[in-house]
Image (cartoon, rainbow, N blue to C red; front, side, top):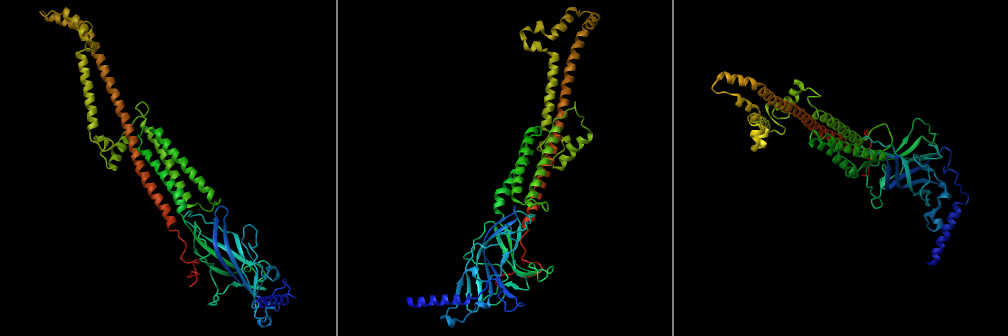
Length: 506
């Protein structure tokens, strides 16, 4: 047994020595100068590591499979005791110099230079692993509900189309070209952020160049990937929506609580600015388009700004008074009659209060005013000094002071004397009545001022109600419309719209 192994090793050593005796790895394996060396290329994806949107870089872990034929290394198996396959270092044979053309870091080398397998018929097979960092133009219009089309472009670094013919590898069973990026289910690791939708492969020739140019022929491996948006929904969109909805609660604060309403609105505006800053750190710095989530944040920030403006306007109306502003009939008609009816309420001019109440509040105000009038009448009949000091009412009462001289001088037996006495006491009575009338008039003016100030507050409340329903409508419609755009932005059914072909194994 050991003898057979030693004999086999000796045969392989002899085979390698014979084949590489006059072999020159710098010479292309062509029998004549016009012959093209056919080079088959296949890409096997084992891991889609990441897609860096900020740097527009795709990082992948792949196996690049390259096959060609070198007639100089063919042999007859019977001459070497049945040996039909040998393995030699990569730097001892001719290589077609296939590299990733659109790499971003300038590293064209593979991760590990594996040995080259040589068959007895001269077939060469090389399968080195590689971690490629390639450029990928990012389309951020629908971020984070986007899909991207990234391409790995391979071509020969030193040989033109007149010297080698780059083609896609052929399937061993069917003989058809493998027009897709191969994925080994056992070796492939699923990416947590991206799902691969299509993976076509094609050879392209660029008509702008001649066959003598290196750029004339290239092999493209496309990866059309759809983003999984759950991470962004949970960590950005949902918190932003919840925080933005808090600004609507500012409408439930009283109209006069302008400071608190502004505090709530501006706090929400600052929180939205933080979310916008987080998004700006994730996406490329481009002016070509605005991401969908950026549009949403700008939308809710505009809504919040309008709500802040509304708070200022409502506060301005609520703090008005007759001494600073005159309420015109048009404003009173619009906000206290037309707007309430538009909102399904009864006109305030007809007696309704905010919240759909009836005339109870105004009746209570009328009753209060009646009590004040009766109190004024009581004051006329019973002075305040007498009400407070019953025991001294005769000494210090208002009526006593006024009427006592009258009583002292009245002679009931003589009508003429009565008229004279009234004439003497008339100035004191007139002054007392004038004082009471002044008090009543001042109280009435204060009530009128309070009523008009209350009307200004009602106008502020009506503006708040109108803006509340408008904000709810705009916020709901805008949110649904923006995110429906992302929902319908799905990867196409076919990788190339002009071809109804999925480029997948049958």
